[in-house]
Every structure is written in structure tokens, then in C-alpha cells.
Amino acid sequence: MTMTTAEADKILSADFAPWVLELGLRVEAVGDDRAILRLPWSDRLSREGGGLSGQALMAAADTATVIAVSAARGAYGPMTTVQQSTSFQRAVSGSDVLIEAVLSKLGRRMAFADITMTDGDSGEIAARASTVYALLG
Image 1 (spheres, helix red, strand yellow):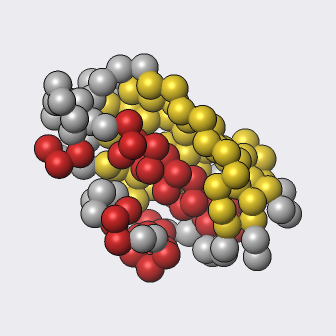
Image 2: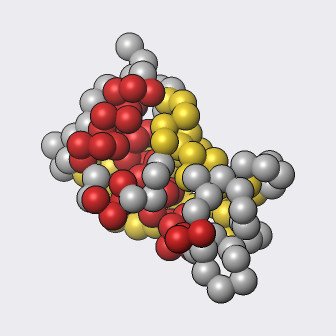
């Protein structure tokens, strides 16, 4: 049974640190091997020059991966980031960002995902990331 966005939102509100919740992430969609989150534009998350900070994008990618892994497993379970690599391709200014995490492999102890972060207005790719997670339970 596929996880609903409401179930994914509950994971987001219950299992993440308060500073992550302050990003305002919303679950847009979940599937058997993926999750799409929206990072709303906020001046608080921008840096000099008006672009969205890389730290906010990296935290959003990390969070989207947890939701994708939880959806694939049918529920949230303890996990930890082992590796994350992010390549920034263009600045985002004044626009929400859509973060799509797609699992490339889900094993018993490890999960691997590729994340695409897209400017919500232009549809252009802002950044790409890859993550590796250790599944702890």
C-alpha cells in the first residue's frame, strides 16, 4: 500500500528537528520509490545576492530522502545519512523549489537516492544530489 501525503507529513512533523521544520517543507507527492517536497521561498533562507542558500537546499534534499525511504518501507524507521553530495547548477531567487528524491536502491541495511531540485517557476534544475543512508532499524 502506498503511503499518503498526509502520512508523510506526519513523519515530517514528528521525526525532524525544529530547525528543519522551520524550512516550511511540504510533501507534494509520495510513491513506492520517491517523494516530492516543496521548499517555499523565504527571504530568511536567502543569502547575499538574493539566492536561496545551499544549506537550505541540502537540508531539503536530505529530508526528501528520508520521506522517500519511509514511503518505500511503508513507515518511518531510524536511519542516518552516511553520505550526501550536492552539485549546484543555478541560483533560485523568489521561487519555491521542488525536491524530488528517487531511490536507486533500497537494501536491508542501506538506501541510495538521487535528488533533483527544480525551480518551481521556471522548471529549471537548480541542483542535484545523491545520498546514501544507513538503515538502523
